[in-house]
Length: 196
Image 1: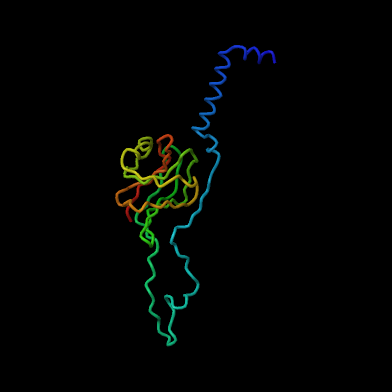
Image 2 (image 1 turned 180 degrees about the vertical axis):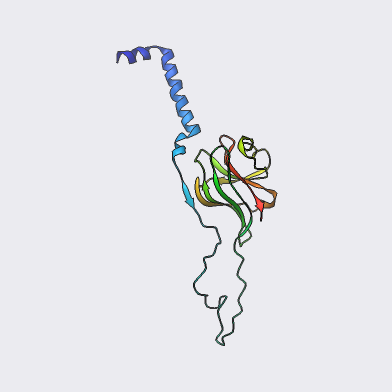
């Protein structure tokens, strides 16, 4: 007890202690090291994907009229169509999985991450970009150099998930997807979108 009083009696020691506590608090907030041990798995189905049915509906495709002839039916809307895709490569953190640019039946587009596996981290985003994907450290910081669209926060660092494109975004203008750490301006991983 006497030692604590002696330390607190020195003003410089109190100042150093306050600075150390503030530094640890700010460092913890900024780096969020606990996320390295926390995984969040998200499993989403592709929007508009239709499950095959066991039997045709009355009046639907494959149904027959009372005379036994096929009934005319309205053409079913086209299902989701993959326009481009690629495999994720690692940048700042080990990252794997597939990326697809998909046009849905209603004409809208989504970026789909499939079997994503990366580290959790602070302020992770999914970016659609026009930057080339480069391996190694050369590719860590290129995605904010050109044009990019943030599709929102990464929903989970593992699993399959969808990120809708805003209606005014032309997907043909973009060639890659990055899992981007906005806080530290670094790519965790990225994929080149090869047209199908």
